[in-house]
Amino acid sequence: MLAARRCPIATVAGSGSSTNPTSQFTESYVTEDLVLRTARSLAREVGLDAVTPGAGAALRLLAAAGNARAVVEIGTGTGVSGVWLLRGMRADGVLTTIDVEVEHQRIARRIFAESGFAAGRTRIITGRALDVLPRLADGAYDLVFVDAEATGFTACVDAALRLLRPGGVLVLNGAFAGGRIGDPAARDADTVTVRETVKAIRESEHWIPALLPVGSGLLAAVRC
Figure 1 (cartoon, helix red, strand yellow):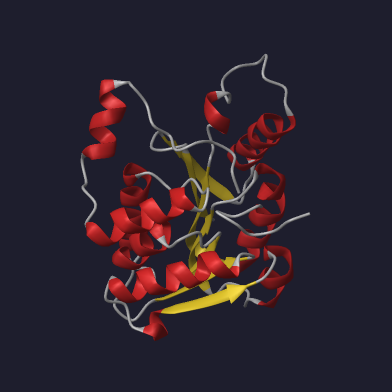
Figure 2 (cartoon, rainbow, N blue to C red):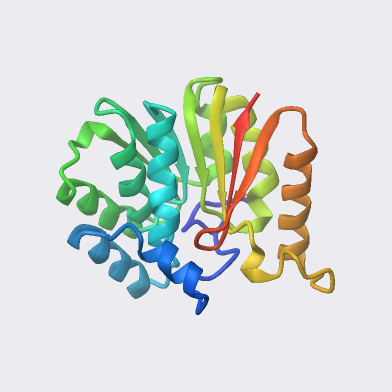
């Protein structure tokens, strides 16, 4: 069953923190302002793992590189990833963000406003991703970001293939499966699902993928 929570379709991995000096440097390379730090603190209070600063910076970069005007986010959370995406999008861009948790979205709405984004820059939809995604237009989006439980990856990838324009970008958070992705002995359901999804995208003629070693792992793929 696919839902949207940080999303529950949402926690494949933890916060992505690491004692590796290179990872620490990567995560601290772009600093977060008070609004993002507040959103991150609120995420912890409600039990969510928000994207790390390094992952957020990568999302902003991908949105900016694609001159993104229309973005879909599965898993609103408290607005951390949404703010990063909005800061990379065009000034007239609209973020469509989906989540089942009304209270989380209430927090995110306030965070978006405190970041200076007009209400018209976001379309906040409460509901299960599987119920909402079929209502979105084919080929109308520049980027789809999935912050979801591994059980929803397949459905999200299928939906992204329909929603994205050619050249649009799919980003999956949690691609390292909590650090277990490279361990052949790890055979739990979530790890197997992530591993199969990563492999399927790599081998698909529809995607040009790369794994980005930030946060919990971002799998980015351009739609052919």
